Length: 302
Image 1: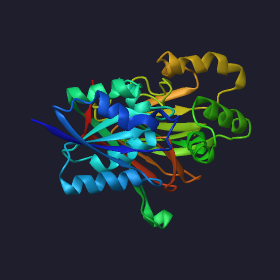
Image 2 (image 1 turned 90 degrees about the horizontal axis):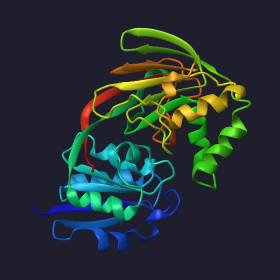
Image 3 (image 1 turned 120 degrees about the vertical axis):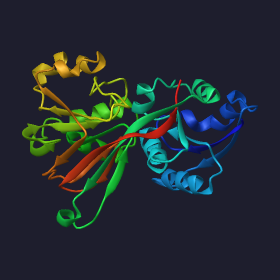
């Protein structure tokens, strides 16, 4: 059976790996097994619209996000709960979900994964606000990871940053770290009431932020659970000991980290109202409800 694939390309994502993508597709895609079309995004979140329209047309078996974590989120949002599979050609800065799925970061090798057309099914997370408190209803799909606090601040800063990549993230963190104050968060984690001061809190489907930094080392993409990582503001003197744990898949061992697993989480006082959604800062609200949607997204994997 020959499959039909749509590539949705973000021409401005990451560090430019996608610039020659049509030549890469033409050279490395197995044309005996796969037909393809290519569309380019023209504005923020256009990929979400293109993917939704493609699903409605019913012409494609898979839609491939060519870009970074935000581009992947746009496609995942429109494919979650459908029979259309998502592929990824990672061309962003962090590429968190692609790394967790062991998808190669070299575009030609990522195309070769598509040729095998191996489909797995993973979870997604839905985050929504309380419109009675926030005045407007918001709902977002999370494919990889979300966060509040300093994490959301960094995502907002990155949207305006001229540079991309790890250097840009490092510059923002070093600039805002000294003055950012911990917030007190009240949460309901399944049936448990929790109140904690935190520098940031991550809500993870995937195990990492990107750049091979495993913020939630025990997270699994298909276990029906959200991994909650509550992080204190780490004293500068402790950073040389704590930062390596992100790369060694043992961040949970830090004295500044507290981990939970749950199917649902409610945050009652996200006072800054912003949330990091797969690397993009989104204004959502003060009261947030996170819920795991077990095995809701089909993906093409090695």
